[in-house]
Length: 67
Image (tube, rainbow, N blue to C red; front, top):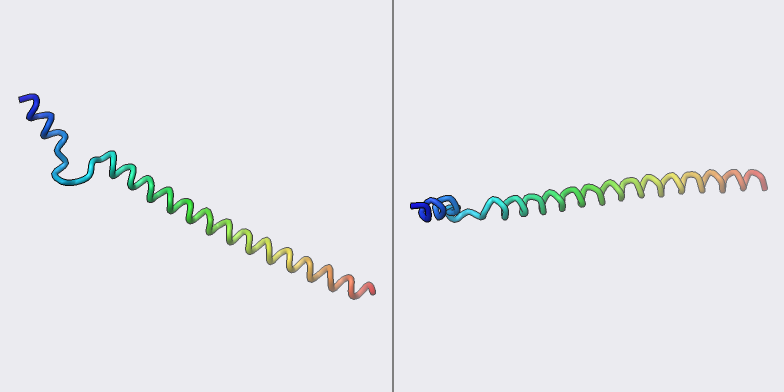
């Protein structure tokens, strides 16, 4: 009887185990967070590049006026 109870407790009715589903979900969540972090870093890099370009243009314009 105890053996039957153990088998019934372990039977997932064809579904993956809870441990597998948890690992799978964590993997997807990790991938999503990584993707969002890369996207944010790209936006910050683009903004910094634009700021550098603006400052460079302003310095070049000031140098032209001084010459």
